[in-house]
Length: 297
Length: 300
Image 1 (tube, rainbow over the protein chains, first blue to last red):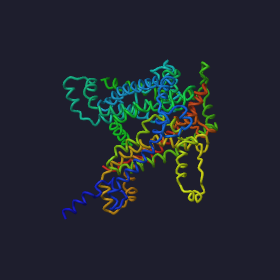
Image 2 (cartoon, rainbow over the protein chains, first blue to last red):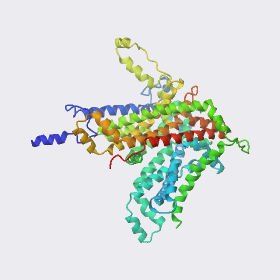
Image 3 (tube, one colour):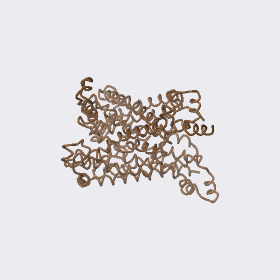
Image 4 (cartoon, one colour):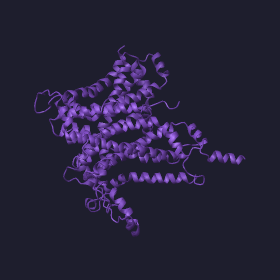
């Protein structure tokens, strides 16, 4: 009797997500089979990456004669060398990094400042202003492209660093997400700081921001990833190739002479590696953040 | 007293200028002749709009955009939901699976588009796979099926397959991201519902149909709205992979706006008119969609 009880609680479908269409006999083998199937599926999905990586190590001749072989005849690093020397990928990567870091830091500051006020302060027109901020999420980027170009041109910032980053210094999604986070924080610490004579900016900077660190990290990752991947805006606003981010650099790569597809693949690997590295370091924050963004629906 | 305004001022100034300001400017530009070589901008009234409505290229682009959305939205929604349901059942190793499926969506679209240009070549891996599978089959079975040779389409060079190929590329990019969103939604469903279903003797299919899907409604709404907005703005794959061809079969609204505005310099007024028509269309669609699928409080 006692044994029976234990076995039903031990093997029973306590986790509804886990209980599948498997029969009783299969129940033990089923999770393993499912896992194997999914791993196989995932590897199939990652095949294009693998293929890109392999090709980036092939010599030009090897690539032309057997572009779809999964093993290079001789492994070479000259593709990377050419991508950096002829293709100037090093400059592009540095540009991407500079744009992404600038946008991330600036937007974190601007967004959190506004989000804090929307969450904690009361002032006339607050809700209407917040509504306006949210409304900007409905404006499609492709429609704003031409006027944005004209505005930046009037500011004299075409083909400049500032022209690339400035339009991304504030974002409705960031303000929304951080406001949500501030609303759920306890007010005690902020009240204590106020009693100690701390001003509004001091409370925001020294008390609220440190407490919002998890949200800031998640939003920062999002901003970095999306700015690194941004393509159409730098393509439009920049004309000087030495200012291109890596996305634009690679896309226009193919038109250059002396650049071959295996160099393009080497450059693509270089453009993806920082993101993949960042992803592995911080995937918990990233996945958690995506779950958050899905919940507002 | 004016302290709060100082806090929100930077964000409001930036969003005001770059979001609302640009929309207003776009409207103004669309009503004028906009040639950078000419210093003055002649007022044209609704002429650009009338032209846009009659322009066969705009009509083609609209139809192609809708075609892209009609293929991509159900494909991504269904496959990411299916993936989430399967991955959700795995207990040990779920983390690594999520990571693997998620990887494409953090990779820049440009990189992905470049890889897929090669994947989709006539002699590329996409066509090679069925060829290899076919090669493994015994001759008798091949004769029985009547297909001893498989050449496969030249995906991006054929006007019939170019758009599906672009959809495939976009789906590959997006599936992992939406899988994570669906997994979060699945995790929020209280377990009692499943226990109740099991006591009532529901099988796996009934559980999915009558418990999971209805309770996942808000997540589904969010995913569909986001997917539709994103699909209608598709641009990067088109720019990198086909440039709108062959025979305009992948010309979409965003690429037409881009080309009219920047490639044929001096047609910014006309391009802005197309952009505004597109915006109004998108807005109506999103409002209708939100109304039809308004999110509800499903459980406490």
